[in-house]
Image (cartoon, rainbow, N blue to C red):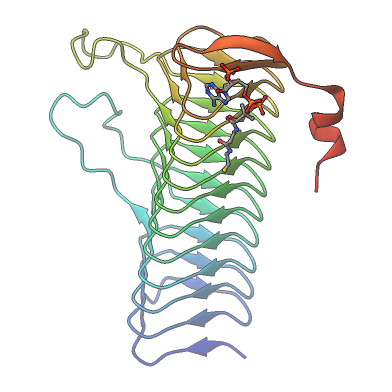
Length: 252
Ligand SMILES: CC(C)(COP(=O)(O)OP(=O)(O)OC[C@H]1O[C@@H](n2cnc3c(N)ncnc32)[C@H](O)[C@@H]1OP(=O)(O)O)[C@@H](O)C(=O)NCCC(=O)NCCS
């Protein structure tokens, strides 16, 4: 049985699957699609056109499909984004904001107060931790673990099975805004199954290779080759990742 609170506001053009639940104070906009078994918590706002796959769980005070508000001269594209799409069984936790034009793959979790911006992609079974930001046009792969308070800058690429420890900070602009309008930002790339420790800073354009390990607190100012272990400020190579530590032995 669907459980629709009389204190929810659902636009008549919204499409509700079987067994959906919408709590008090939730706003469901025009053209929204709630897949079978999806649930939307109290006070959450689902903007026009958002598509929630079957079994999605949206907690309280979440905003889905927010339009970007850009300052004059912003490097984010000022085009009308497509509708937000959440795959099956996605969980969006309290206070998170997921923008129009983003796509979140099946089984992923967006943590409390996290932000996922327009044009970004989060793959399947990934986690965006509490208060973390996946900025516009960033691409995050499958089974990626993004811990608390991480900044994935715009245009960054984070491949499958990557681990980003708490407070990882990526940057994408060596000029800090003093470049010609429209110039492409130079974001980091973190290759498959790399691990990046707490508080690490990745400067613009660096690449962290497959299965590399970046120790806590490092500032990565040069590319890190596959399986290198780097530590320090600036990060320097200390050793290589052992065979026993490779992801295939640890995938859960
Ligand atoms: C790199 C790490 C694994 C320690 O490796 P280790 O080989 O056990 O290092 P050791 O403790 O034996 O220390 C070896 C040397 O490296 C130094 N060192 C250790 N960790 C360091 C780091 N993160 N940055 C800089 N230097 C470091 C030590 O001070 C020591 O230096 P010394 O030989 O001059 O005394 C650990 O520091 C680390 O970064 N872990 C990641 C934790 C993390 O961010 N997890 C994320 C989720 S919580």
